[in-house]
Length: 471
Ligand SMILES: Cc1cc2nc3c(=O)[nH]c(=O)nc-3n(C[C@H](O)[C@H](O)[C@H](O)COP(=O)(O)OP(=O)(O)OC[C@H]3O[C@@H](n4cnc5c(N)ncnc54)[C@H](O)[C@@H]3O)c2cc1C
Image 1 (spheres, rainbow, N blue to C red):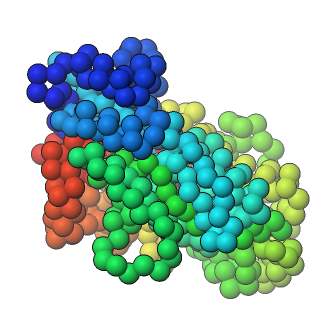
Image 2: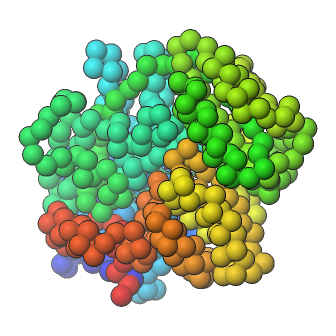
């Protein structure tokens, strides 16, 4: 269990709140339990606990002051609260303990004009992905990371989790887009590296160290991000297959034949049925298939000819192919994939296990995990989907009690046995901290802890995330 709130020597929560109010304004310090409630539970409903204060600083200078005032208190940094591993919310503390401070970054929403010469933009940590994307589009450029939580997920949260999403296949994860960072460290000092120099070999890359640090090393306040050319010509196809192995073989053909391929997503018959009844959608194809792919290509010139060429090489029956070249039709095909996360949550509180496997073992894993889940959680409902182009599957299990970790343990051990990673893109958070050793060696964990202790000697930045403190 992470440490409880430790108000600064002699200071009560009320004293701290008063000092915070002097910095950020009284309306940005939430002490009333009702107004704090939405900050205290995660998107899945599985993780959460009481905070003592929610504070919403509006500038980097204010973040620095907040961190200094709360220097002996645990701080949970929270962006859009769409994270799926319980890293951005407080934990269940003892009833007599006050809980951590939640530092919400949503007011750090400054978005600078696009630097078209460099094809870069500086965005505050609280800027949502959707706002960033539309800002880039207005400059005839594109921010290449995309995910279904785009209206709420923030730049800071996406950097902190090294978010992946739908276009990793072509553009890489968030890490590949970060060319500079500004952050407040645990002692309140401000670290700034925002020149945007693409080539700069002058020692340790501290900005990249903060990418994927999940709030454990400091509070990211702004990021300098790369943009790419806007590819307005798009084609989307939804394809049906006999199984995962056939879908993987198709991705291979598409990758080799479609230059602008930027998404290859998989889902299965049972997931499609759930999505259709949740979102009231008609069947996408005239016939059911065990596995489905949604693939997308985008380019300056219409990529549909290349897509049709690859599809004819695949020689799929008409009942397994739907292609859309217009935006409305493309959105219709994407909906079958994008509604999965919310459809799963509509049937209960899910155990969400986001994992990567070597591509060569993905089909075997898909079969094996069905058996492992049936054994570990009999009667549960398993929904699989994910970013197959990156070897990334989201294993969702609904049925076991949120506290019951038997199925998590069984699935993550299977992943490790098959040389995969226990977290592909959502991070470790609190949900998977106890299994970090399945993906990181003793020496790696030891080096990570040394970094953590050097930058956060009091252990106040998001305790319990990444590193398990329960043992
Ligand atoms: C419908 C849906 C679809 C999703 N699809 C994807 C997907 O395709 N790919 C993917 O990778 N993820 C996906 N996610 C997960 C989630 O959107 C990402 O993890 C996202 O990056 C979280 O951003 P956030 O602003 O909501 O962060 P939060 O949930 O607020 O926080 C996440 C973590 O980052 C830390 N953090 C947040 N802001 C900061 C900051 N400024 N400085 C330091 N630490 C910070 C928090 O402490 C926490 O550990 C999805 C979620 C939902 C609900």
